[in-house]
Length: 387
Image (cartoon, rainbow, N blue to C red; front, side):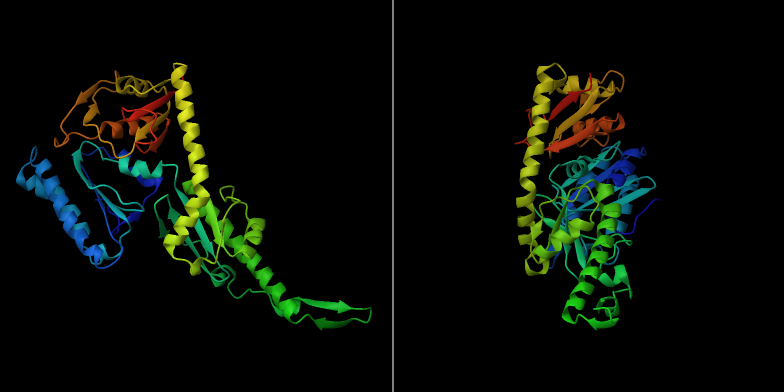
């Protein structure tokens, strides 16, 4: 069985791996979790209630012994020591024959317990394909923290092993020695130390080397893999120096000029969203405008049947789907795009919007998830065609 130790952070690679699983049944469980005591005491109870839903769904098709066997990996995973003590805001568990994934989520998902022929990945897509995500890099002269955020919250994430978390990690013992900041005076060859000035120069040199190492490693191991915009949170005097050594195109010019340890994470999240919101709204307006123009030109649709046909024909360039909406149907024919309504309690049924998203990605299209208020349609779907 392919298993992962406890849980993993959510990435596009995990999504692709989930989409590649073909064994049935595929069990998908989503639930909100809590990071602190005593709130996290309720999480195992929530999990047991969702397991009862999965059991009822499985028993529609499988025997008692088979059902018990299908649920056993989830029980084993969540019974590991300390499992419920180090959660994020949400948890997703995916289990199928020979396959088990536990995934930390930086958002609090709705409770979902589904059994189907494929994994229910739309909540993950909702997060990975939403346009309000960003990173915040909190920097001071001694160490750094990296956060992933959206309009609602910031969650500290683990740094890649190759990212120096402190100046010592970046420079080791190779800090600038004071003797290099010595100046000559006159023509006699006599020298004089600059005293306080030389120490400041050393600090500036070391800070520049440290910031360069941080900027390069964050770009390589966090920004490039995710494509997320990056906000710098640091004292005002560090912004110019960091921007000077930075080559990461995802670092925004506008940052948060604050000493990060001096504010709560909630305050930092509010300050970050104040910077990000105008860019987020601009992107949303552009996307909706593109759809409306495409629809007017006969190159877009919000009709589910028409979009399904366009998807199987590979004509969809951009698919827009509504967050948290589930349509109990399946695309039953990948040649004609035929759709069949089903009962979500049936173990063979997944969500139609899930099917559409997976098909769009397999055909090289892009998928964006919008809230109901942002959607340009009432059907839960909108598509921009290539031709």
